[in-house]
Amino acid sequence: MRIQVVGVVGAGVMGIGLAQNLAQNGHQVILVDISEEILERANAQIKKNIRFQGFFNKNEKVENSENCLHKIKFSTNYKFLEKAEFVIENATEKWDIKKGIYAQLDAICPKKTIFAANTSAISITRIASVTKCADKVIGMHFMNPVPMKPIVEMIRGYHTSDETISTAQELLSQMGKEGILVNDSPGFVSNRVLMLTINEAIFLLQDKVASVEEVDRIFKTCFGHKMGPLETADLIGLDTILFSIEVLYESFNDSKYRPCPMLKKMVDAGLHGRKTGQGFYAYSEAI
Ligand code: NAD
Image (cartoon, rainbow, N blue to C red; front, side, top):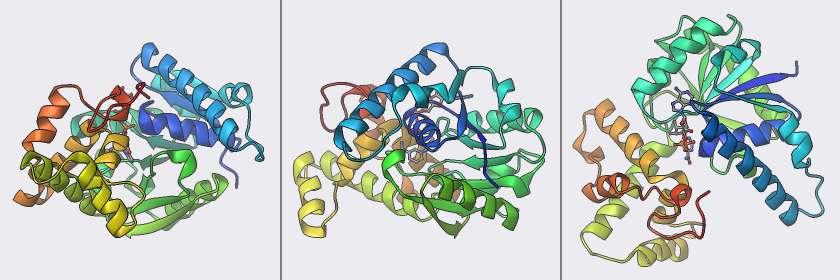
């Protein structure tokens, strides 16, 4: 059965991409964030992204921005999410923030609504524990930029039901994507490896072993990666990298996940990567 209304919580890097991708595939979207200013920025960014997409895919039929934006309701009011059959949460990677959001979703949404956490590292079982419907909570770790990435890491929490998994797979197929299902563990498969790699690449810079460009070039030319670890960090957002590695550190109580001091300093200085216009590289505008 086709899912019609999807709630998207958080209108940052991931929420923007998801709302756009869902609307372009014909879903009605309710996009919720904490301020009108953030939502206005998200609206403008989606418009820009669609124009950019049209420019690069001249031969493909890309839904125009008017049609697409028409399908998205931007709001700071969680109440509108009572209409959502499926909610994908993309708020800041902080347990205290996510915990509060799931308690609100649990109180507002009907029992049958599925909650998908697009978290980088927080355990899905832990997220489900603050709801009364642990069987309806699943991890859906989308890749960035969402409209261009066809594979999603899906995470089965301790109580996630088979029905929830098959509904989530159905939504992905409606979005032209496919999931790879893994079991729950902080960081899952992708970020347990990626966050350590990025953190260690920052230690290399801190220890003056190589420059930013040299670190990235080694990964691209020697291993055939499309992007080096530091370019990837700028794309994800350095604040999100720091929060994720902190989640891994706390979850495993293992010192191998200690965040690099240089990463902490860059985040404190507001160098969050592409989204602020400056990270390991400089960007002509914040996106
Ligand atoms: P971001 O910082 O760009 O955006 C987070 C958004 O959440 C902000 O707009 C913020 O205002 C909003 N928010 C905070 N509290 C809220 C609340 N109570 N209700 C509604 N919105 C709230 O972060 P992002 O990069 O979009 O990451 C969002 C989530 O997706 C995180 O859990 C992150 O780990 C995960 N993720 C990120 C990437 C990536 O490449 N950036 C990839 C996959 C998953």
